[in-house]
Length: 130
Image (cartoon, rainbow, N blue to C red; front, side, top):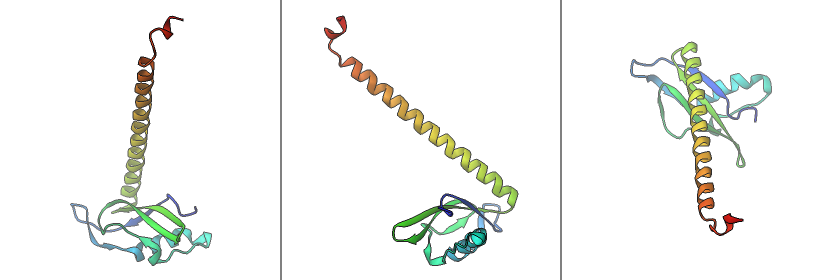
């Protein structure tokens, strides 16, 4: 759990369109994770890192680390041009997640209200005269 669901920042050069000059691979990710975890005596090998798609642009990517067959961590790799850009991207990412979570909970509460109304309409009118 030391690794799970944390942000790791990788500063890279990129063009105006956000396309990276170079590439991000499992070795570069292992290097930044290990440097961040050096005081915890945790070591991540590059072959434990699973990247779904090639990382060619600036942004925040979710990457899996397979520690053992049953232990998988998800981390977020924030690829930016500078530290300030990385901080802004992280804030935006977190705000967007919170917004999505609140809209999901709003949808669920409205769905439960609709189902309650349907249940109320199914009551027998004779029962309501009590």
